[in-house]
Amino acid sequence: MINKEPIPNKMKALVLNDISDLRFEEVKVPQIKKECVLLHVKCCGICSSDIDRIFKNGTYHFPTIPGHEFSGEIVGVYDKNDKHLLGKKASVFPLLPCNNCDACRIGEYAQCSHYNYFGSRCDGAFSEYLVVPKWNLVLFDTMDYDVAALCEPAAVALHATRRVKLAENKKVFVMGSGTIGLLIAMFARVQGSKVYIGARKKEAINYIKSLDFDYIDTNNFEEELKRKTNNQGFDYVFEAVGSNEAISNSILACNNFATVVLVGNPHENLQLEKNVYWKILRKQLTITGTWNSNYNNFINDWQDAINFMQQNYATFKSLITNTFKLEEYKEAFDFLRDKSTFKIKVMFQNEKE
Ligand SMILES: [Zn+2]
Ligand SMILES: [Zn+2]
Image (tube, rainbow, N blue to C red; front, side, top):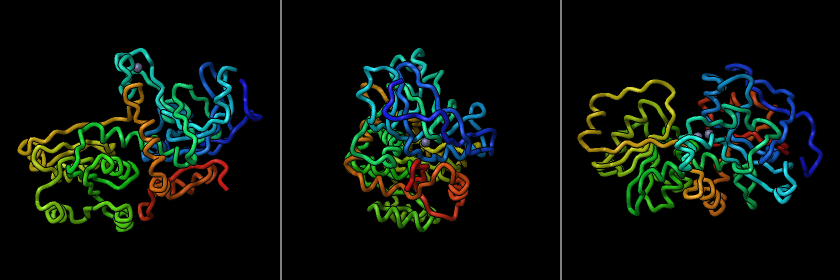
């Protein structure tokens, strides 16, 4: 390996040893491999899927280091021809495709049938160092590492908006004011749509207003919907919560011939009331799913998300409400799981001042 600075043998990491058994441990710095770089992880976002992974579902095997929304500095390369990468900043597409299946052959890696994934199927970035294939690097230069760690949810959100043809003057509703919901709203707005966001908590509604979006208070959903849309509903609805109630409300929010994009990951089995289901039929709705992001030579949600983030830097920076050091993980997860506190994106940051 050719490295930019001395690399220690051991590093600190959050290791998931079993469901609900996350520990701050010292582990070996991973060995660099061919076609890879060694990344010094600077920031790693905590995703709601990480919370389910750590406390409910587990990773694919134990022990695993979680963390898939990250950025860092390239501090080591395998090949001397890659020396120009040393010191470069990068965010990382966390999916490691098999490159062999039908989906991979057409560049649809999110549908790969034998993929590996940083932070769920193999070790991720709740750590100080990670070995990353060059192919997965999304280089950037002007952003801070925390904003760059938003690249993963931003690419996922941009991808969701690209599942439909958003057009000028179309009315869009985003159900949910978490990171993904807000990012979808931002990408829909730049594509010319008039965007409303559904939220329940007062702080979330205030935050939505501060971003100059309209909102629908979901405490009073049907009434607010009627009042704010003149009883007409929306042309495009993005469901970014994944609960029974949110999905039902998303369908109720539709105008005739509208499209619902299902984004939220469900936490349990879902059920629709007959009256809600009927709306899909009577209004001739289109329901579509979205998964992960495109990362190929034709559509690269990652590069497009980075460009957009650079142009709207302050807004993205404001999405990061809290940062913690890896060793503060207990505090971080307690904070995240406490439903009474307001937060949007919470991150681990190495070398936090
Ligand atoms: Zn995520
Ligand atoms: Zn594949």
